[in-house]
Length: 270
Image 1 (cartoon, rainbow, N blue to C red):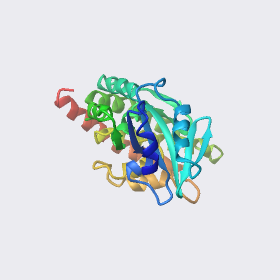
Image 2 (cartoon, rainbow, N blue to C red):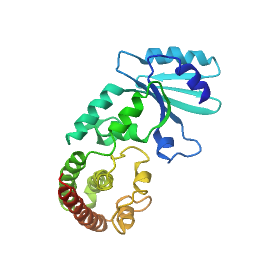
Image 3 (cartoon, helix red, strand yellow):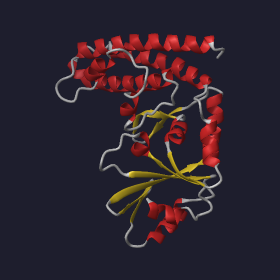
């Protein structure tokens, strides 16, 4: 990592450098790569072409690979992936969150979509390696704590989505339609994660590794692991009845938790 920093820190248009992904979340394995996040002011200040030029300074010992959407490298037996993030964009998302506004949108590799709040979860959970003038630190401070208006909006919206998912799942009676039940169960877990992070006053972590982070949350439904195992079997055949029963039970537990959390927010004047 020191070699990477040695060629990137001198670049004035890079305002900060962080380590993200599974390593920042504390769920990395021995062979996990290093997600290096480069913070720029906006898209014009530093580009992928500039990044490639800077990495050339590492010499032939660093093998650089570029795809249409990603720049990665390998050096010293370690793999690195590089991501460019705009501080101005994150600042705007912080202001949106304070107003209780978010977007749910389609994104590659996210089968159930993603939330605009992901930008804020990323900046909160990063391990900061370099912050030229403290701009990243100020953005991170402004994103904490998670705004009450955002928590309220997320819980109100996605508790309804969870209810609707269960209603549609209960309509599936034939094993010929099993793939639809599996898809709905997966979507149900997506909503479950959003609501659990919200109940715990956290920005939702929805990418790979998010389930491991969820397990560390302080507030979770009693016995939820049993229901999750039914909905996400590693081996064996999914039972229509048991899957529907698990969704109904877990939905009931979650809806009760959401109601209590919303009441707490209301009692606090939110």
